[in-house]
Amino acid sequence: MTYKILAVDDEEKNLKLIQGFLQRDGYEVITASDGMHAWKLLQNLNNEIDVILTDRMMPNMDGMELTKKVKAHPEMRNIPIIMQTAAAQKDQVAEGVKAGVYYYLTKPFDSVVLISIISAAISDAQVQKELILEVHKHKKVMEFIDTCHFSFSRLDDARDLTIYLANFFPDPDRVTLGISEILINAVEHGNLGITYDEKTALNSDGKWGDEVHRREKLPDNSIKKVAVSYVKSEKEISLIVKDQGAGFDWKKYMDIDPERATDNHGRGIAMSNLMSFDKLEYIGNGNEVHCKVLLND
Image (cartoon, rainbow, N blue to C red; front, side, top):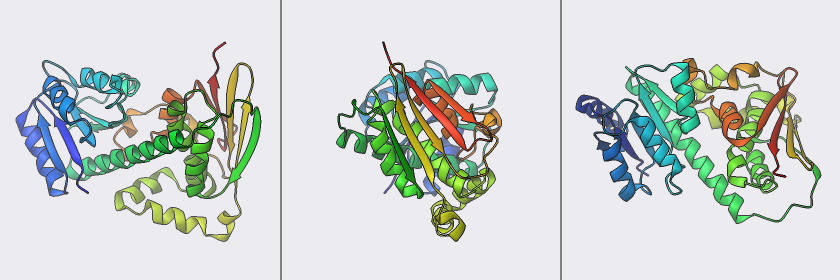
């Protein structure tokens, strides 16, 4: 399958550089000279575009304005957006994240970083799309359930449980990605002990899935479980997830750090905190997390 990338930049030399890098790796590239041009193209091609790679500062319509338009459009909002900027400062990254930008490229960048971020964006978007489709397909009336408990051990199980759990919430689309990220984190970083740096390298080499399956089969890991509890009260819904790992320094992952903004992973907890739940709280050393959604009166 050939993926289609919309590259948006007001400097022609940048577009040619991006186009050369991506076409060499098998991507189809469509170019736009500014946000206004990109928006016109998207209105005709939105169902064909897999990733939008846009500059931040442009005339007529800048990258932030384009992002807001895309994320407000019901048929475009799930297209991943990568923002390229010369100044990946914390306030700018935070502004972008709130608007829907989860991937950043700090200029100047090389082809390896570009391809890595493009690949991560496509992979994450495919997972989210598949999960949301399954949630809608299997949606059931579960409003009478106040408490239930689950346990699982494999990463593949996390996907199935995500689909089931999302239907307990008033807005399944909102929480699907957050639930998925929290459950995956509990398996890969919790029970399997895959570190942040290890995942970065595994993603770059395309070996993350193989390493997960290898570690799942190890005797010490095969008996580990992730415990999940769902609790509904009059005011809120709580999802409590606890793994059997050693924990991690969760505080630095609650927001997207500009220093990690161009990494090929590491946005899941911050995205869950910002977009999926009203409150996300890690307990103790980080192997237990409480995810809460407030209910309207």
